[in-house]
Image (cartoon, rainbow, N blue to C red; front, side, top):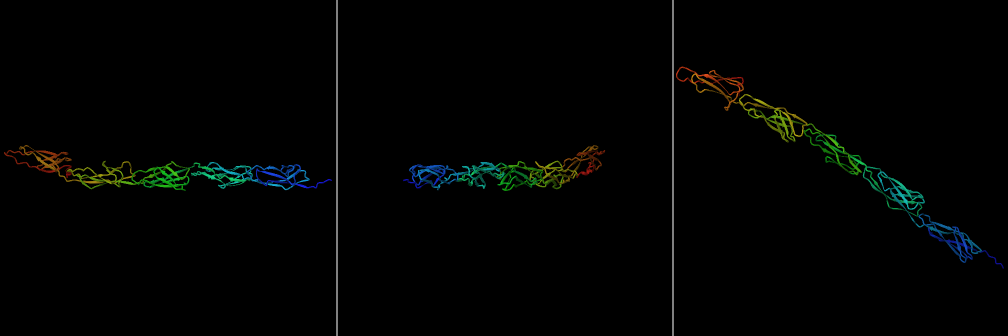
Length: 500
């Protein structure tokens, strides 16, 4: 009897590890619904082959998933049976249901690190560079704390952006700039993490000079005020202190370019001492400038004299007699700070002491005599000077006069005669001129005396005496003659009237 097969189906079903982590192994298992009588070969859609040995219902094969990476590439893998042969089955049919495995990402971190130009000069450019620890699969956008954005293109690990620092200036504002990554997205990374370390750049000052220039009132009158002004070529950020060569200090306030100070010149005086005053800047500090340099040019001011007159005068202290000294007072119109030497018209000099306004001057007395010689003494000022200075305007007063009057002094003309003579002898008559004290005097010109008997006697000029001789009476009688009496009867001469 022939026993014919009834075609019974044996099913080959494929299963797989339900999930693995990237880089892990998927195990594919083929399960037969009946034990195989001969080996069964199953070809999978991924190209692998699974063998179910005779007498068994299962066979397996392992599949190595792609190595672990940093990208978001987790997936589901589906594999089916493409062909199944062997096992001596009436009908071996593959189950078409795919065997699915979820491949999970292992989360690996990609770091975005920010670096920057280590130093630049103010006004320069800082370059910020973002470096990824793995190449980006898609563009990465990085936002910086300064508001800028850096893009790292797909397939690259770096991207950069330039930052313009503030323009160069004159102030001390060198600094360190710190910038960090605030956010980073893209690149298809499993995890993109910003490195929190800031990128630091030192901004160095380029040394620019600010100049402090001193100016002054171009001219003032003595006793006036000089204003000194300091001008900065740039506004000060903090107060600037400027020391001048005259010891004064000028302050320029923060935010300003100028400051001033007043200088009181010496008080007005009477001397020629106009001058030019030069002041410079000794030192300047402050203002937060990179470099503050004083201009060495002096500020010059002409101090002009105000013309103040000084009058030197002389006055009489009153009239005198010929036996007294004429007295004058020499005056100056204001007290001076140094002695004033005054020259009089007679050549004499007097000194008015510093701080005083007058001095007394005594001339020599004319001298008491017997002549009618009243007179006067007139003196004026011819010069005046002080040590170490000259006057702006020196004026002299009018001359002064002292009237000198006579003292009435008597001149005595004394007649003497030979006390006795022999009759017929010679009698000598002598006239002697004396003053009130009996001292002899000289007459200025010849004097002619006439005696009562008619005899003439001449006292010659510049002489004190004069004589004449007459013959005594003579007769024939015994006995002495009567005494001869004579006297001065009159006097005459060119200058006889000059005697007091």
